[in-house]
Amino acid sequence: MDFVNQLQRKFIDYSSSLHREGIVDDQFTQLRKLEDENSPHFVMEVASLFFEDCEKLINNMAIALEQKQGVDFKQIDECIHQLKGSSSSIGALRVKNACIAFRSFSDGQNREGCLRCLQQLSHEYSLLKNKLQTLFRLEKQIVAAGGSIPRVH
Amino acid sequence: MARNGGVAWMRTTEKIDGYDLSTSDTEEVHVLAVDDSLVDRKVIERLLRISSCKVTAVDSGRRALQYLGLDEEIQKKETNGFDGLKVDLIITDYCMPGMTGYELLKKVKESSAFREIPVVIMSSENVIARIDRCLEEGAEDFIVKPVKLSDVKRIIDYTTTELREGELREGARAKRRGINKRKQREGDDDLSSSPPSTLSSSTSSSPSSSIQSATAPSSPSTLDSPTRRLKMTSSE
Image (cartoon, rainbow over all chains, first blue to last red):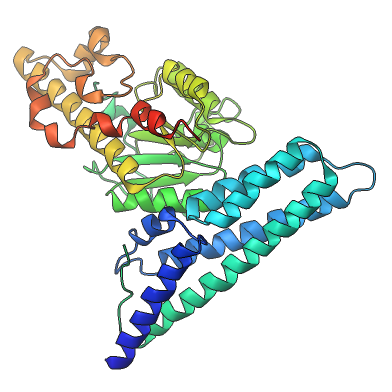
């Protein structure tokens, strides 16, 4: 039991740090509230859909920015819009903010600026993914050890 | 708001293409959720299920119309039972490729069969002009994304209230006059077309206001109303 308590403690601390660092915001907490015995890993499930979405969009933007014959800024804008939307829905604060910053450069049709933003966005995404995967690993360990995931509010 | 032809709509269908359609004249509100984003669809679906709703989630306005049986290109008889349970509420994203949520709203409100279904619009953009336009077109409410449980609960609460009131009114009228329900509905245009309730649906036109007070706890508080929320977030 002590082992489970330790894991749960770790989970709470790590979760709090994600909020403190601005990696996730209140919407993430809102999603946690939707978890119960029937759907104990809801957040993990949404997050993995988000990761797929994010990777696809980042990839599309990279390709669009590489086009020698001219960058389709409208397409970039679409991608940013989608990514901003889904990151907002999952509570991925820093990714969302990176999208907002990105938008001003794509509005200005500034290719160099966009490339820098894309790099920043990729960085924020990697950070988010690593940290959430660490959190979810803890989650799985807790459940495997017969414990329940602490509801942090 | 009177329920529109409940009896005529009920269809008996089995599992179709992953849609789990069961026969029941259930108490649960059946919501048609429309959003092109997979992440958002997953979230709204969960929010609605937790709020005890049946959910059908589709990824476009086009599919929503097909589900309702309103798609012009697909005649009803060809849908092979794609359309299923009666829909009590439509929640749709505004920004979608192809058909926007606004266009979907218009199509629903233009349809005689479905215009009574409340339509709620969701949008990440907090634009007053957009919100006004939707409300003018007959949207029941407008939610600024990201959607929270409190938003969904509020909407389901007053949808349930409206449904129940509609049914109670129907029952009371039928009882009083002892006339067949269907015959009666044809003549009661004024009661079946309530004005779109926007912010405070607890005060929407409802002759039998005695029912209102019984549901006071679940009626939306002005604090939760869309424009109040707008004012609070207008600095965005």
